[in-house]
Amino acid sequence: MPDRTVGLQDRLPVVLSRAADHGRLWMVVAGGLALAGGPSRRAACRGLGSLAVSSFLANVVLKSLFHRARPAPGSLAERVRKPVTSSFPSGHAASAAAFATGAALEAPAWGPPLAVLALGVAWSRVRVGVHRSAEVVAGACLGATVALLGKRL
Image (cartoon, rainbow, N blue to C red):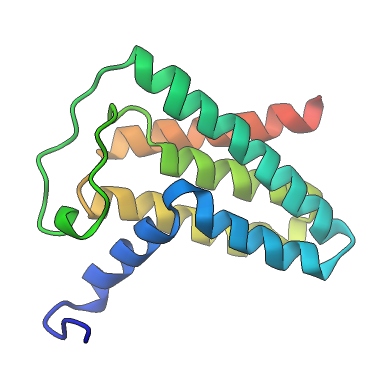
């Protein structure tokens, strides 16, 4: 039974943050895009490819170089998986921006709704208290850059 004392402003970031764990949210979105066919199928592939590269760079390469402690846990942090890795950069934000940017490069009509969803995921990481704003911005910049470079290649 849901906790009725917790408002939507507290539930939404928890739901978004959990859904984006391990790229699951983006895999579901990619599945929907793939079913649509045509440019949407290519968007799904480019989005997932961009996500894979940016996730590797953020979570394996950069987090091992930057040993930044997580912020002090807030009241919502107990509702999400507690990360044990470095806080810089945000892997969730990197993956979100990479998928949204990569998909939008192939199917521009999907750009605005995917951008809103990606921004929601990035915001959720700050709202639940597992990242600082700068870490989320850095992750999003990384993800968008990976997607844009991927288009050039």
